[in-house]
Length: 85
Image 1 (tube, helix red, strand yellow):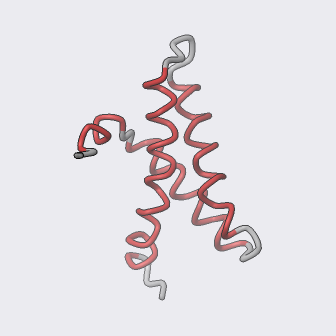
Image 2 (cartoon, rainbow, N blue to C red; image 1 turned 90 degrees about the vertical axis):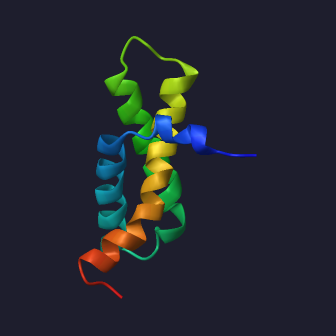
């Protein structure tokens, strides 16, 4: 089963904002590390609902959650880009 169809739900703006928020949360404290995926998923959902205001559909919800959670995967590349361990 291919999950390539999910790429059409990726919103770079949402992923970028969630990436920065996740990076800030991890930089400030280690106590919230395990909650970062939940935090960025919630932020991604909130941003998608704000962008698609008045047009709340399952596709808008999926785009927000998927973009927010995708930012957790982008975190490693971002961390290496700025010179982290």
